Image (cartoon, rainbow, N blue to C red):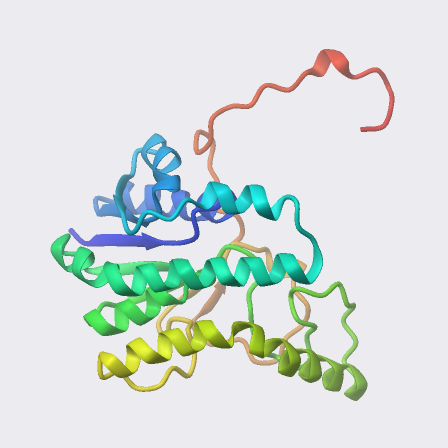
Amino acid sequence: MKHFGLCCPAETGHLHTMIPLGRELQRRGHRVTYFGLPDARPKIEAAGLRFVAVGDLPSAALLEQLGRTQGIPAVLLTLRWFYRVAETFLAAAPAILQAENVTALVVDQLSPEGGTVAAHLGLPFATVCSALPIDPDPDVPPVFLPWPYRPSWRSRLAHRLVRAIGSPLGRRLFQLRARYRQQWGLPPETSYNSPRLILCQEPPALEFPRAHWPPHFYFTGPYHQPGDRPAVPFPWEKLDGRPL
């Protein structure tokens, strides 16, 4: 029996992708534990999975603040939060994972610190794309922009320029991981994705054409199954013919 550790942001969309994977691993006889912020505990335990806290940052306060913020300030606020979460995980998770005898990690693509910790502990890990897959393919617009797909040299140049401008926004996160990698005697990071397995819960038909998917990248489609989430009542009686 393996002991799989789940690592993803405590926000609902990421949990709704990771929980079904954890339940399926558990159904197959493995031990499964989510390691993360306390805000995730109710949903994790309601799904029948084990929870172990790493740090005590309150993400609910961030979500409330994000709800009142738009544009670049919202992006900067999110990146600052990701930095605090990553810093907490890098500092505290290795000892916790060792104490729990974890044998492999399942890491959200937006929690790349999980891959760094896995490398430090010598653990295999899989990357899960809970959102759109983040990939530096110059033929494809950055995931955070609503640009259409145009395979022209002008579009490729625009994509490269945007990524060059945008990369400083995530540079602190990269430098944080680089500092820990150096401290732990690891080689420099060339990719924060798993070299073994990358899963994407998106159907391939929704993705732009790409020429160079990694050979270990798999589109799986959604993971959700009946019973994964509590039923939410819908007020059908209020439907009166007006558009929703």
